[in-house]
Structure formats: C-alpha cells, structure tokens
Length: 141
Image 1 (cartoon, helix red, strand yellow):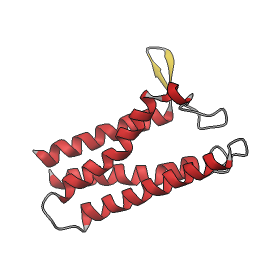
Image 2 (spheres, helix red, strand yellow):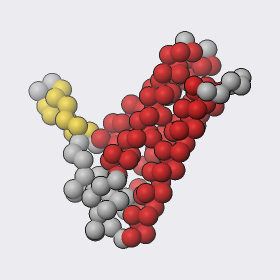
Image 3 (cartoon, helix red, strand yellow):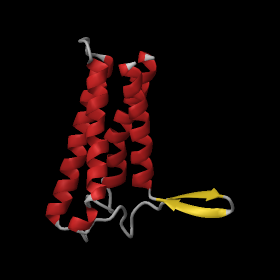
C-alpha cells in the first residue's frame, strides 16, 4: 500500500509541478499582452512556487527517511488542491474565471447522447484531489 501511495503522491506532484508550466508559460498567461505586467509577474511566481513545492514533495516521497515522510508529502500536495478550490469558491469576489478566451478548450464528454463540457482546470483539480486523497487514505491505513 505504501508503494501505491508513493506513486499516487508522485503523480500529483509531477502534475502540479509541470502542468501549470505547460498551461501558463505561454501567450495565454505569462506572455499574454492583454495582461498587466504585474499579473504576468504573479502567474510566473505562482507557477515557480508550486514547482518548488512539487520538487520538495518528490524529495519527501523518494529520498527522505523519517517517519511520516510520505504523509507529509501527501499533505503538501493538498496545498495546490485546497488553494485551487478556495480560489474557485471566491472567484466572484475578484471577477475571476476558470478560462480565458484564448485558453485551453474544455474537455468534451458524450454521455447519453449529449455532449458535456468540463473545464480542464476543474477536471484536473478534481482528478488530482481524488488521487491524492486515495494516497492519503493508503498512508493512514
């Protein structure tokens, strides 16, 4: 069970460390001429900060040798997940949005003959939250 937990925590760390770099270091975010320079600064800072946390999580999972190291790694993974959902819950306060006009298109699911669109950020965060929760349950078992 511990190996499964380590693999799940690793997958979440890699996704939260590299995913935002892929999604945000381009013309939709970090180099978007429509964004203010200060907003671009903050997105780059946020992405690099999360990448640093993800690297530390990987160290905790695979190199650290103290009791509870995998538990701490799983808890740190929740930093990105919890802050995503807190931001989502407060978007109206700052007129935020899950997507940009020139951003990544939503996932398309066909269920019962109907097409359902799901925002890629929401889909990814929910998936990563689920995987990390499973890992946490395995660590605590």
